[in-house]
Image 1 (cartoon, rainbow, N blue to C red):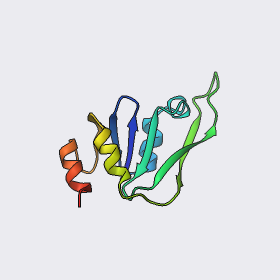
Image 2: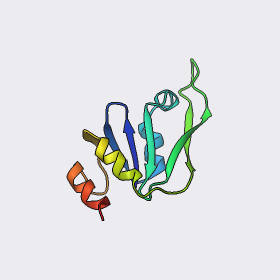
Image 3: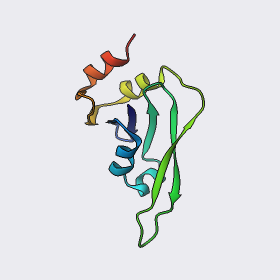
Length: 102
């Protein structure tokens, strides 16, 4: 599972990177509208592979950086006001908290 949180504290859940790439516009990713991590707590950063131009929407991919921090997913969850996109049967913050709490 991948987690993305935007600047309005809305949390998005994904089963795959492909879903992230299809859901978010490159211009928003380029403007650092989102933070990303995976379920192990590894931070993910967006690398722009094709820049946005006047005639092209651009593209990006996610790169893992650093060592996993098991507290990172819970920090996303605790910051979140609501879930904007659910996956894997998780549709609310309480269910998500249960999944990540020891």
